[in-house]
Length: 386
Picture (tube, rainbow, N blue to C red):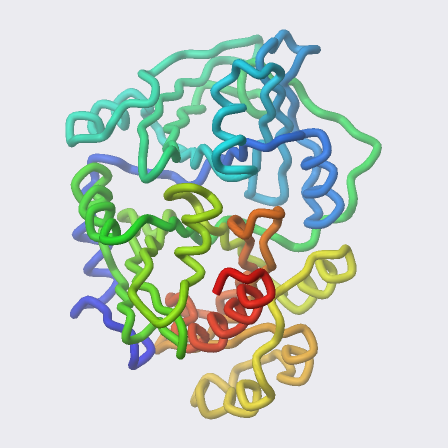
């Protein structure tokens, strides 16, 4: 890892071996957003990010209280859900938080077991296991609360052959822009309140059997004005990674505080989506209107060869092209990575996306933290929230 990382004292392989196996997770099944207008949001994510129409549930399928559009790109599935009346608890969530992530669904082989194992270890129940079925088979789902009002939904679909879930129908559309090369969700970051990071680290350890394999404190993640602390949690096979952030005291308000103020509580800050060609992906996203954080200074790109060291010998990307697109580069002992962050995707400065390409590196861009947060602070200053 980078020298300035505060890491645990043994290798990732040993850490993952130590993760408890009472909750085997196969991957991220879907991420559900509660939004004010799902039809318009679906058009945005298709147009701007290259997601494809996949499945639909609404009045036409017998759903009287909510409508959901499912979008897909490679292994990523996002669900956009809107209430159909003012009495819906979904509506209450949107009024308080704005558009944001409500459900992080985890693919499991046995949803009943996942629910039983987590609730007996202290998880608060969101919904007990329930079966849904149609002509394509059946699914089992069950849910628990994590930080804030966020839900982990366990999804068992081994006996289901349909497109998404019972109650949905295949969504066919004449409008399906080309994908932008997004492959899968690399990690999802949660922001929690003052002094709550270690509480939720312990929760993921005790309730879900995760391990904390990277830690960053305010001595590592700070600028002249703001600071934060973060710990990265992972399940045993390393497929699910949840960094957890909390604010730290500094001269001015950090990005975490800004998020907590506008989201009005803890929640998912960003999704990091992997690509095999970040230059191509970012160029396409910019051409489609996605705005990214402003670039770091010239000195950042001048210093890349020194920071990457031996990895420069295998680096394929042109530094000038990376600078043109404001893509950041970092390295650890296993390789290097490239990453870039969008501006907030809604008017509230809360949810954003990260685009990441890993070339062997297992870290999270610690060498980019200072440049990244200074860029965020310039945006905060314009918003009057720094």
